[in-house]
Image (cartoon, rainbow, N blue to C red; front, side, top):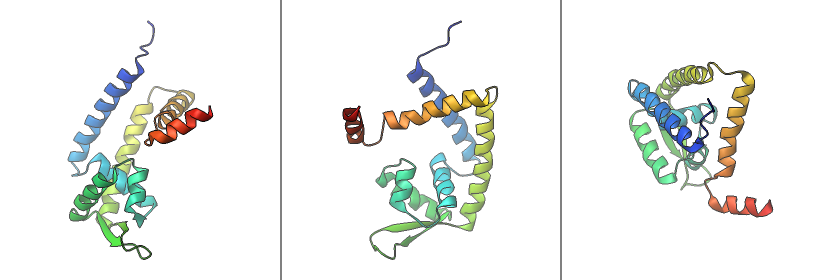
Amino acid sequence: MKPDRRLIFLLTVGYRRLQRSLEQEMVAHDLTSAQSGVLFYLGRNDGALIGDVSQALDIVPSAMTGLADRMERAGLVKRRRDGDDGRAQRLYITAAGQELGKRAAARAKAVNTELMAGFSDDEIDVVSRWLTSLQQKFPKDKATLAIDRSKA
């Protein structure tokens, strides 16, 4: 049987099922996927500017502000004004955030292992390269896409 090449459909259905599964598991830990992403990022970049976190996670700034508010109320992060620019805020992970981040990272590793099961390293490399190419083909900033395509 010929493989299904309806890539948009397959990607959308796969994403929805994976996201639903992840969200159901995260609810048990009172954590959303977006919050996990913030904890993962701050685990490597503690004290990052809120705008940098927003950009790294592809979250619009207004949504990032609300997310930071909820995470601060939950005791997962603390916000402080930037020393150089009083308008900017930095996010710092708390001990509770570090602990929850470690549990979320362990679960993410298990899910990644499950996603790769039954595929060779070469096949996973192709899938990874394809998924990464989507970020280049469909950037957040459509002006970037127009400039890149005009150079081709």
